[in-house]
Length: 250
Image (cartoon, rainbow, N blue to C red; front, side, top):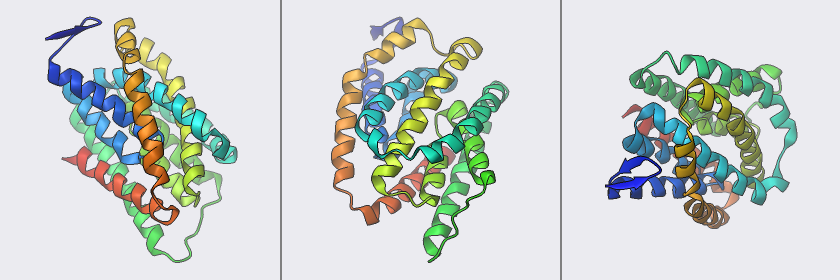
């Protein structure tokens, strides 16, 4: 056993923890599917609800790397439409997260991700897809994004649906998502500290130890995304969303 800031972990659990941090770094700089694997891996080590509080500060660290590199590509018009609704979704998620068990959580998240995947595939098969311009679309996806990020740190698929629907190029997609998640993740911290009590001083210090792994992952993500042609990046996102759906359901 290895003692890290009052956490008693096996060597394998420590390895999984730092692999998770590396995957999160990759996810935040564009390798979307890497982050999907992080949630179940961390749950294996720490359990469901506690893992969400341990994961959040790592996400916040990775968000900083993503924003530093991709900030110049951000489309703020989309973010300003999403943020108020995402905040509402976070408030709803804070309440609902205390009322449901892990099985119900997986069911809800699986339905949302599979629904998002179905819409993405339909859009790709449509030669001239309609791009929703009404406030209702940003409101719906903003609330869903806020809810899923609060309950399970899994809003990537919901935001992928919104940003792909807006037909954003690769770098603008990543830059806009980077700012969205940095702001909403920092907004979530007080709810984890005071409402759920899943972030403690010891868990925060444990998270700080992952900074080197997150940095390496962020660098690897940038390298990988550069090698993916623009025309294939949309299908890369769709494929990793499908992977997320399978992981959540099974």
